[in-house]
Amino acid sequence: MTSRPADAQHLRDLARLRRVRDRIDREYAQPLDVEALARGVHMSAGHLSRQFRAAYGESPYAYLMTRRIERAMALLRRGDLSVTEVCFAVGCASLGTFSTRFTELVGVPPSVYRRQAARTAAGMPSCVAKTVTRPIRNREAGVTEPHLA
Image (cartoon, rainbow, N blue to C red; front, side):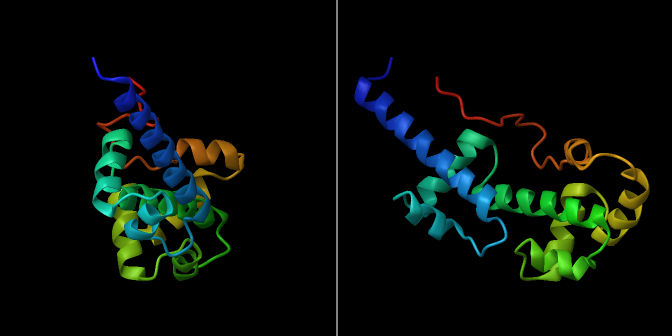
């Protein structure tokens, strides 16, 4: 059994991790790095990375890239932007890195996804398309919320 001060610290850390995750969700298109995220919650970058991975099953950077790719998928399904425009719209600075991460996460390059998605999602409400096409980087983790135990 852990002591009450340790429990209180654990809950404070979880709250800070949620703030980091929420910031990534809100500001995914902005230049974010682990050091800036850590400074925002008064943690070291290493401690934030370890705690974030323990709570969510992936690093802050991997979570950020998953959010960016998820948004890119939605923009590509719309079909009115080029892959390059989508890359920069979601906050990626390198088309090569974007394409590599997209392919790694989705299974096909962004240009192929754009062509396939236009046919697959035709007539499907965007909220449904987002849910059924959501990328999952760490399928084994299956953790979306940290456990309070």
